[in-house]
Image (cartoon, rainbow, N blue to C red; front, top):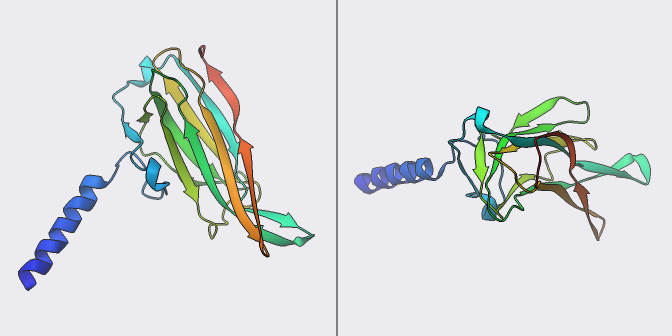
Length: 180
């Protein structure tokens, strides 16, 4: 019996190590479908000819009724490479709170998102560290002309028996080179 317990523990550790994406910070929470969307990139930063930075608002909670009444929300950051041919290189995905303090970094190193692929990062409803003015800053790049990516957040919550949901589009705040 002891042999099988040790065997199972070693096998579990090996599987966990094999399935871990080292480029994504350990604090990153993915939607299960997007967990394997990012791959290691071999691009040298000097080869990046096109790029930019997006600001994406996130609402960890919203106020309603009176200023003392709030509802916590879950949020999903969706990053979509809408180019039909070229990979998108994600250089930085950082999460900030309402005061502008960085809460966490979601990438340990640059990663590629394949053409027409999507990756989603989740902020759980119980994670209210960001506040009502939380946001992501996403820095991206490409080796050459590429369609500008789409980045948006989706917030979900509940007030009483009513469900609420809304989108918040990302806004480009910096561009380098020409997109298609």
